[in-house]
Image (cartoon, rainbow, N blue to C red; front, side, top):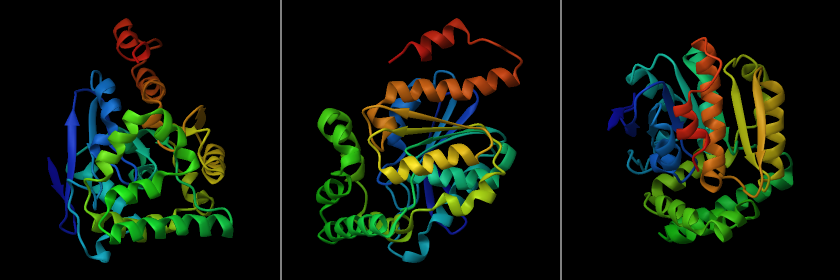
Length: 295
């Protein structure tokens, strides 16, 4: 299914299940399929909506730079909510989608019940980190100019935070590469240039973030970069109702690398609020068997 954005692009989304709504926003290089394991588990109790950001297949890919920018990703998420007439929902984002989700949550206000951020992106903390970040992007862009998405994905992810995913989680690495390599290189390149080149530094957005009252779960991998850990810790302090959980033996793509653990954390996070809203104190036995005890 698709919605049409205000600037004329088609945004694809997948909807599965019934119940309270959860909206999923994917990482750079992913699409709606990035959330396959989460939807498989949560659709038993929730309405799951996973969309694909502009520039990534099967959503519209434009070759014009004017169609790309972080503010456009945020606007797309807001317009998805408006088009689907969502009144109240949970919001989940990973990587690029985590930044989009957090910035959109400020605009969406009380519509957002809870926020869950997986592998929150971090603006470089030093000139050296900025240099390393942009050098890697330049290498990926060079691979894309050669029309070689396989080389581009390897260049982008062959890094310390992703060593375990590549070495120990080969099946999940192949799945992610399969998603990445189906995208049009123009959309990938322009997203890198116009979105990922300057990863947001949330320290400069502190005043705005303090107004986000939705309970927020931050999930990071202990192999992720130092800057990502610093940003996650900062957000845990700044956001009024935030909790930080670190997962061992994984890097940036925690929902790929530790799906069972991530799913349990996510489900507990959203259900805790729902139980409170409904005046309940305990999970049902059916919920426990479907979600907490499943791997």
